[in-house]
Image (spheres, rainbow, N blue to C red):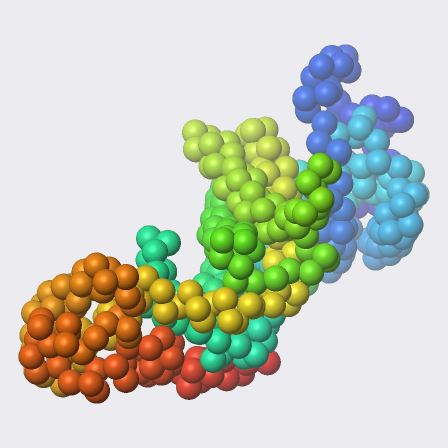
Length: 473
């Protein structure tokens, strides 16, 4: 079964000749070459391609498909190529189209005909499916770590301001008082789910397509379990057609990335709003703001605005790859070459956004007095009045809601807030109301009373902070 390394094929491709050119008499047209070549972007798969080749060569030797001498030469050549790529001296050449052929061509230059034996029992179809799956898997791992770094920044900031009172909003209108720590911890929960989505996607993608070859498998006695284990996969993929045909692992990762980007955009939007003079809830240092070329007073939260905009890149990438895949019959079509650029761009944008947001969260400082003043505005303790009427007087909530609405209307007429509304005015609406009602009408009292699990009371916030510190380590 072992091929003789001295038996160089008589039709081996020469310099400038395509690796697949035996069937063709002429070179591709210049325009065909321009649309077909992918080395400009798939060179990012170099380390994954080398890893797959190392594992494949070792398996071929163990299976008796190639000799020990050929495997040793191949491994040494791949090591040399890895060093050249690391040093920036590797000769990436468009004439060889993609990263796979560039590596193989360079390997032939380094070790001779033995390089041609490396492609035994595999195809560029399973090779690219492997490389891309490895890249996406690594991107998911990186993203989880970056999400956790952002969560750590949020938890630390929440811990420092677990008692700081601010308005909670619905419809961007004052709703009920909450704490700044509680508000930040909401994003910790969101990003926690984002991290779990990437982790879940990683589990499903962790099957090795190597050995599926072009689409039908291989007649050689290959050991797909061996290569899967060597590359950190849980198992080899079970169907050779599916192995090379689908990119759902990338689509799922982009879906998780899109949801995460939306969460980043929402937090970025809040930072932009909070930075306005009309709100004045937070300050950012010069490290995460820029000025105006004409208005010297400006301090713009450009980092937050750019994070907010990056969601367009990520969502666009998901849409782009979905449209590439939607009408493709099994198995491989060259359309799938367009899977990499949107995925690379999406993860580049997401990873940069996560790092920028972690920096902004660590940098920002709340203006607690401004937040506290706003927390009591807009009759934000109206629900506390309704709850008091239910709790102390035994009123049905709907009746209490109606009385509270009338109290808010009367306060508006008098130009007062609820804590400033005279007792006599309240008693006109419900005679049994006592002066004890004023104990629940401050923002501080409202926040302190919300002690249900997951509520905004500072002790509950600190409990969640403690839980997340343990989770994040």
